[in-house]
Image (cartoon, rainbow, N blue to C red; front, side):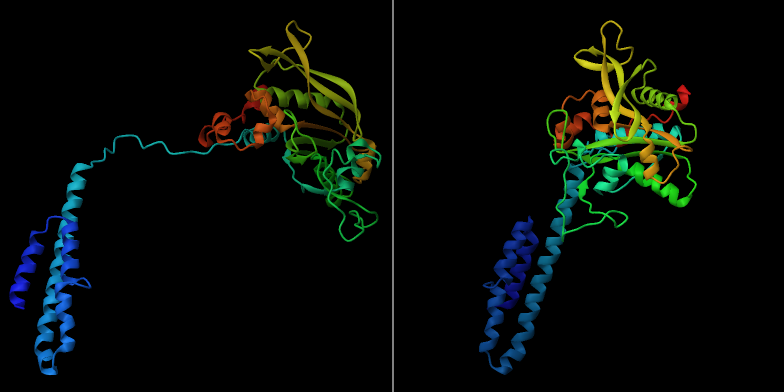
Length: 379
């Protein structure tokens, strides 16, 4: 075969190729496994050493020339295609960026932040504790005897006792591990820590937000929910301090100055006296709107939270002298506060993870409402 003619013809065909597809076809035709140039290279094995010495350089030179021409033409076609695409597909930098999917702040997280802001303005610190508790901190230290209904299996998630006997925090008695049923154990742990740091006692002013667990599930109850409790321990604390704190907190949270509270006598093992706190509300468009007295026309009372003066026995078990130190405590469901403020009607939706619900009720990260000036503005 006339190699000069083959080289000239191949280079002309390569130069005339108009698309990357044509170039690829020529590469296969000439340099593929069954290509023309590849076939010629295979004939070297049938030649004598003298012939290979002459034909080898010529055939390899042809292969290199064709391969270089194909690469050059391919690069030129790709560059031309890119230039054409750039000229055709212009980008207007003055247009707004396309909307991207965004997450949102869950209503529970939002309410937690709001509560922390309010109580920070009132001088409260945030305290945390373990969600897996022992029954001493969860019940006994809060003046709940063994026979108390709250210890029953239908209310509490207990863990099975491992390896026989477990001991309490002092290593003296059997104990059972459980998922905490309220954040009150954080109050006990905080008082114990205060006594350890200062045997004579020290003022305590904390809130304890967090997850709690009870065996219950319906439209207004879930096995896991969120609770925030408050505790104040100091000298000469009385019920009036509790009432003022709750009024100030609720007015700031619901952003209304007409919040009216009603305190009813009640019973909790860890407080004495104990009071249920009701708040006045009216139905507006089928939604409960807080404000005004529950005795006013068109209004009613709604139970909102439980509270009271810390029981002397709880103070004693925490290592403090109840004749010197008094205090009050309160607890309220964070999820319930969110439902009241933002108009939600089913607690179970909080935990379903439905993106549509989160998109509707969630808060944009950079557009969250803030209450940082709420308490100061009413002081």
